[in-house]
Structures are given as C-alpha cells and as structure tokens.
Image (cartoon, rainbow, N blue to C red; front, side, top):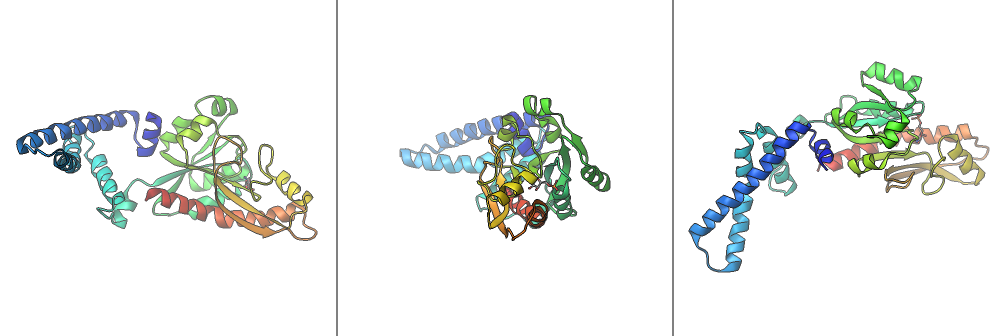
Length: 294
Ligand code: GRF
C-alpha cells in the first residue's frame, strides 16, 4: 500500500512519512476544533448538529492540513492536493498552466522485439506538454531499442527473469523514474502479480490480432498471424487492452480491424497490422493517460 502511494504521489519514502503525519495531525486538529465550535454553539437538534458538524469539518480540513503542512515542509504538496480535490469536486477549475506545470506523467515502455512501437510512442510524446517517456525496459534489448535510447537519451533498463518474475519486479527502478504507466510494446514476459497490483489500470498492452481470439500464452509475433491465416479469417487487426494477471486477458480499451487479403503471407499481414499499431497505439495511450488525470 505504501509503495502504491509513493508511486501515485511520486514521492520518496521520507516524504511519504511526512505527508501521512500531516494527514493524521491535520485530521485530528480538524476534529478537535470542530468539536470546540459545536460545544460553543450548543446546538440541540441531532440532525442540525450533524449538518453543521459536516460543514465545519469540510471547511476546516483544508485549512488545518495546510497549516500543519508548513512545519512538515509539505505545503506545496498539500496546496496542489487540495486544489486537485477542489477541481475533482467541480468547485475549482485548474488552469491549463497549472496542469502542465505539475509533475509530468511518466511512461515506462517495456519492449523485447525490434522496438518499432516503442519508437512510434516515443516520437508521439516528444515535446508533449504532459506526458514523458522516461524509461525503456527490456529483457533483450534489440539494436532498435538501443539506438532509440541513444538517440533520445531515455535510459534503457535491462532486466533479468528471476528478479522480474519472482523478485521485486524492478518496482524500485520504476518508482525512482516516477513511472505512472507501464506500456507493453512487444514484451513477452508475464507481468508479475505484485507489479500488476501496484499499477492496476495503469498497464497497457498491444496485441496484433482481435482478442479474445488468437491470444494467450505463446501467441506472439509470427505465430499470431500464422494462426489467423490458418483459420481463414477475413479480418485481423489490433487490440489494446489493460493488463491483469492473465496473458492477453485484461479489459480491451481499443480495437480496430484490417482485411486479410487473398494470398496474404505472415509478412504481408504483419506489415498491415503493424501499420495500425504505429498509428493507433500512441493516440490511445495519450487518451488513457489524459483521462486518468481528470
Ligand atoms: C507488435 O506486433 C505487438 O503487437 C506485439 O509485439 C510486437 C512488437 O513489435 N505485442 P515491435 O517490436 O514494436 O516492432
């Protein structure tokens, strides 16, 4: 739970402790002052007492945590936190400058193939006001991925199976890069359960066919297109989906089709599908990320 909060608020363990102390003291202070005021008002009717108390707590809480946040050095965090809450409740509207001036949303792209999708995504977000590709992750960095890392300066993290699958899932490296979303683009290993839990609803994958058909363990690359051709399908396409604990199983967020033509080979079909991937994946990622900010 603490790891999840660190990742959500993009803070280190020390700052998280200060934030939690501020919440605790600010909350107790609110209750204490509200009770004193209620005693002074000596309201009789129970329902009126409850209504006034709720209104008081709602008004006092932001003031109280802001005051407490000052000695804890967390005023900046809490003033932004309260403005965001106000915006969520429709009481305030954040100016575009306030949104863009806030910490960017960081993506980590996981790729084990040629890295063509990683490149398309990285190019899409170059100079983006809000979203930043901050990390490339691979168990088998291809020449394409290495070149992308060198050209863009985005660090490339090489991972090994035992630590990823049965160890900590490299969560500390992800947190260090303030990663908000994991973007799988040709990554073949199953994401381990603790990482899925830490990033629930913040992991996307792309599959080069129309799930739920032609997916599951072992269905990747040429095998997918071979299966589509062998089944005599007239349509194939792409599926972008949330990632859960099961291969190719999370909720689909986008699908689009392309025809399977007479005489198609694995190569010709995969090129057609790949063209869809490069066109749509970056745009869908952007929509999901921006929706997650509101
Ligand atoms: C893509 O076809 C994607 O759908 C699948 O893996 C492939 C990766 O290709 N998950 P590339 O390495 O991005 O070229």
